[in-house]
Length: 388
Image (tube, rainbow, N blue to C red):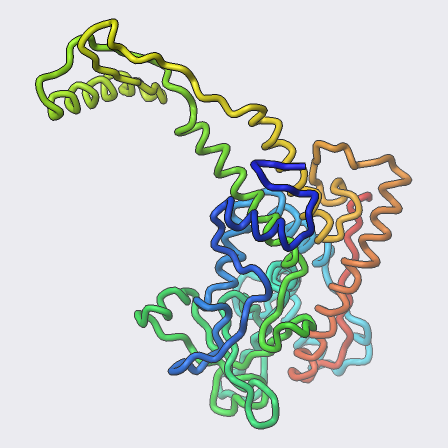
C-alpha cells in the first residue's frame, strides 16, 4: 500500500528512509550520537548538540504526540505524594519534610509540581535531573528543584567512570555559535564550594551511555510524518488551491516591467478584502492565441492524507504502549475506545506496564535526593485513575 508514494507495506528501515527523503525531515535517524568534540568540555548530544531541542520541536508540531506525552506525564505524576516512614522521623526531619512538601525551593511550587516536571522530563527526554540547594552558609542541602533535562549536557567521565560535572544552558544554539557560555553544575559529592549540586538520572539504554532516550524514539519518524502532514495540509490551504479568478488580456503590455506592474496591481486589489483570492493573469495577442487553463488535480488527496494520519496515530500510540487512547483523553477515528469493562482492562494493563514502572523510577530517584538531605523516608506517588 502506498501513501504519497510511500509503500508502508515494506520493512521499517525502508519506510523510514523513504519518509525522510519525502518529507524533508531533518531528524535523527538511528540513535543520536553522544560524542566528544575538540575544545568542548561537555559531550555533544547529536552532531549539532541539539537533539533535545529537536524533540521539543516535535512536541510543538505533532498534536497526537504532545497529547500522549502530556497525558502520560499527568498519569505518572498522580494525585500527589505521600511518604512511608514519616512517623519514624525526628521532629526536625518532619519539619524539614513538611517545608519541602509545601515549598521545596522558595518559589510558589509544591513538591507535587516538581513530581509532575520529573514525570514530564522522563516521558519527553528519557531522563530527569534533581538540583539540591544548600543553605546560605553552603552547609546542608535545604531545598530541592527540577532542572529540565533538555537544558543539560554531560561532562566527560572521570577516571572512575563517573560524571562529576554537568553543563546548563537554556540556549544551546547560542553556545554552539559562541555567543553564550553554559553554567557548570557539579554532581553531589563534588560540590564542596558550590551553592547547589545536581543528580542526573537517565533510563537504562545500552545505545547511549551519557544521555537518556525517550520511549517514543523508535517511532520518531512517524511523529515527524504526522507533523509534516499537518504542514502539508496547511500549505494546501495557503498556497495549493487553484486560482479563484482568471483574467485574460488580449493585448500584451509593451514591456515586461509593465506586465509585472499590472499583475501586482490586480493581486493587490483582489487581496485587499483580506481573503486569499488567487488571481491568474495571462497575456496574449488575441483570443485565438490565448492559452487553455486546465486544473491539475491530485487524485484522492484527502483520502491519502487521512490514511497517512491514521497510520501515524497508530504507530505513535503503539510506541507509547497506550492500550486505549480514551484513557488519555485522545479521540481516534478508528473508534478504539471500547466499553466499560474493556476500559478497565486497558487501564490495568497500561498502569502495570507504563505508569507504575515510571512512578517507581521517580520515587527511587527522589528517595536518593531526600537521603542526601537527611530525610530517610520512602516517597510514594498517589495513583490517578482516569476511570474514577
